[in-house]
Image (tube, rainbow, N blue to C red; front, side, top):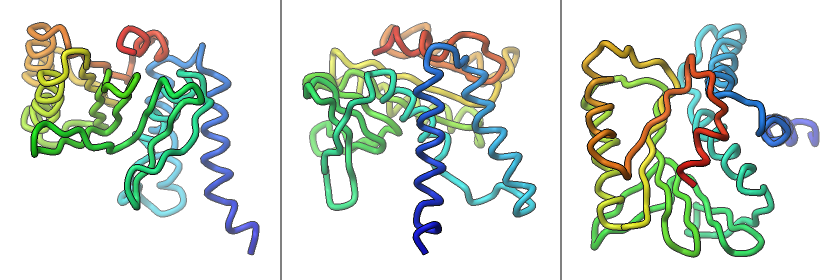
Length: 202
């Protein structure tokens, strides 16, 4: 049935359109709430939200793509992987685009290229399931890439609140304060505009 074929496309189109139309007024908390509301709604339909992945990255990916103008063409990277390239060929953005350092491959959640040079690599977490270990796995990945590429910044984004008095927040601030190429955004309970929080990194 044609209607069934369009269900997913309509959902993604509507969400993308909402992000595009509200670029200038969505706060970091709003971005968190878009995901958390969907997560809660899923429980009404299947009793839990287990097994649903990818939406947290999709929201941020499409927000950034629209923030960069929205006029992008799909570009095939591998058999199963596409990136998106701006009409003027200036920007290329993708999820899980590999970044190579010698023979080692790193796969950030989102990579933004400008004039074929990576300018921002992003790691995204809903929450830190294994505490400092999860945090440092992401931080070490970002640091490995940014240390190799002098014009590249690393950004860690966490949807859920990290208690400011805890060990994880202390470690996060230590890592970012000691490295001017590394920063973080915590979305929950953050009243700053998401666009403004991203602009200083892109």
